[in-house]
Length: 419
Image 1: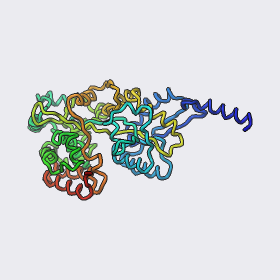
Image 2 (image 1 turned 90 degrees about the vertical axis):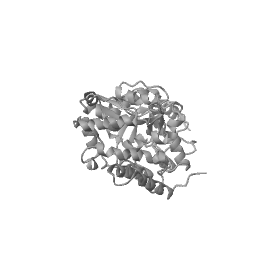
Image 3 (image 1 turned 180 degrees about the vertical axis):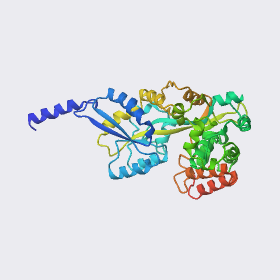
Image 4 (image 1 turned 60 degrees about the vertical axis):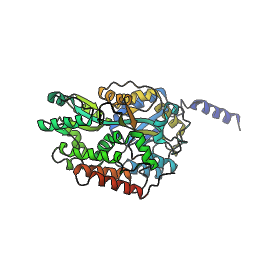
C-alpha cells in the first residue's frame, strides 16, 4: 500500500469519526410509518431536535396511508426499496417481519435499558431473547366526555357501571345530546373502543389474557361473555342510524357537541383539542362496585426498528438510540398528547386530558388488547373476528353467548395452547 493511499484512508477515517457523529457527506435516513397525522410533528419538532445534535445525519419521515401501510411496506421490503427505519406495529405483525429477516435484532442497542420488560414485550420474540423495535408509545382506553353537557345536566363522573348507565339514561331523557357517539359500520370501533375498552374489568386484565393464551380460560367463560352483555345494552344510547355511522362520523358528532360521551382511545386527544369548542374530561371504564380493582387497556402501540437491508445501519442505530432517550420521550409525548411514553424515565406532560388518562396508571392495573399477542396468528384471525362479533352484538343481530361461541370455535380451529 502506498504512503499516499494510506494517508488518504486515514484521513477518510478521521472525517467519518469513531462514533459516527460526523460524516464525510450527509447520510439520509428514511422512516416508514402509517402515522401521516404526525408528519408536521416529525418535520417541525422531532427531526430538528435530532439533527441539531447529530450533524451529518438527515432524516425524512415518509408515511403511507394507515390502511395501506402493511401491504405497502411488505412490497417495498420485497423490492429492496423500503426506508432505513421501520415504524413497528405491536406484536405479531412486527414479529413476522423479524422472522422474515426484515428487522434487525436491537437487543444490544444503547438505550434499550430505558424500557421495562412489559414495554419491550410487544416487540420481542416469544422467548424474550431478541428485541427488534424500540418502544415508543402506548395508548390508553376510556371515555372522553363533554364537561359542559355534564354540568348542564348535573351529572357526576361515573365510577361504577350503575352510575354509568344512570348517566346515559339521564342524557337520553333530556334529549339535548346523543348519550354516546359510536357507530358500528367500520366494525373495529365496536371492538377497540367497546369490547377491549370495558373488557379488562371483567376478565381481570393480564390475568385473564394470560389464562386465555394458556388455554386455562375460554372466550365462552363468564369473564369474556360479560363485556358483550354490557355492549348489548349500549344500542339504545348510540343515536339513530348508528349502524351506518363511520368512525369519522362518530368523531364529528362528539366534537360538534352533539354527543355527551365518546368511547375513546387516548389517540383522539390531539384532534379533539383542535376541534371541540367545549371543555372535555375523561374517565376510565367503570367498575362493578365502588372500590373494586380497576383495569385499563394501556396498549403498547408503536415502536421503531431497523431495516436489515439498510445501507446506513450505523446512522440508523444512532437515531434509534435517540428514540430510546428521555429527550425523545418528552418531545414526543407532549407533541402527541395521548401517545404515552414507554420510557422508564418520567415524562412531564402539559395537556390536562393526557394527564387525566395517564393518571389511571397509578390507580388501575394495566393490560393490553387481548387479541394482539399470539391469538391472531391463525385463520380465522381473532382480532378481526372480534370486530365483527362486537358490532353484531351492539346491532342486536347476535346474542353475547353466540358471539363468544363463534369466537372460541374459530380460535379452537387453529390454536392449540402450549403445554
